[in-house]
Length: 232
Image (cartoon, rainbow, N blue to C red; front, side):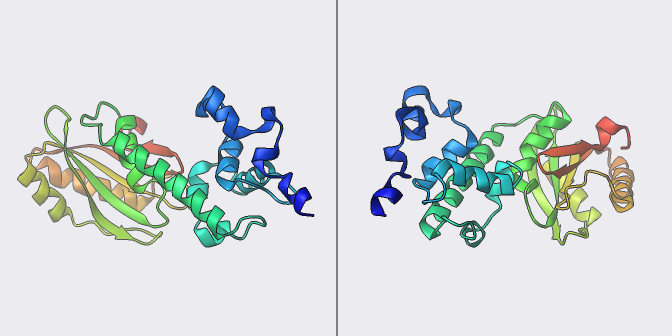
């Protein structure tokens, strides 16, 4: 039985089927998501190979690595063939990937489009299970002066203090603001509360010669821009 189990280890696969060797010889970019996760897993079971196990795990999250990254160690361990060590390896690798993307967005210093704003904010709030409201403060060249969380709440919504938003804008010398919040439900449809809050901030900001440039709703690797949609 031991020999049979060993045959499912990656090191015993044919060369063409060994993702570790494939990575070394051809580079990581040619590997599928399942093959990369199989390397983290190391070995499968009598019933399935590491790649097959990885495919099963990916299928459970609709082949979305961001959704996979949200699974806890305990949730990963619910898959047959995944023990604590393998679950920790998967969770750690995906967290490294998330942090790498966060570092990449730190290089964004000027907002030229709604997509730039999305790239800046997605690593911060795009995958959260709860709702948060953030503000990006810009100077007259649309360079980022500061970004911060204004509120944190449940899935049903957040509370935003307009006075705090404008107080910080004046302190920073900001002339433009980008509003942003996430929808953990996945919907990109703005609620009436979203629209009312945007209008409230817009009116208050105009009296101080500060412009609301956009309001983004982020959800599951996608976003909605109030400015792009003409509803600002």
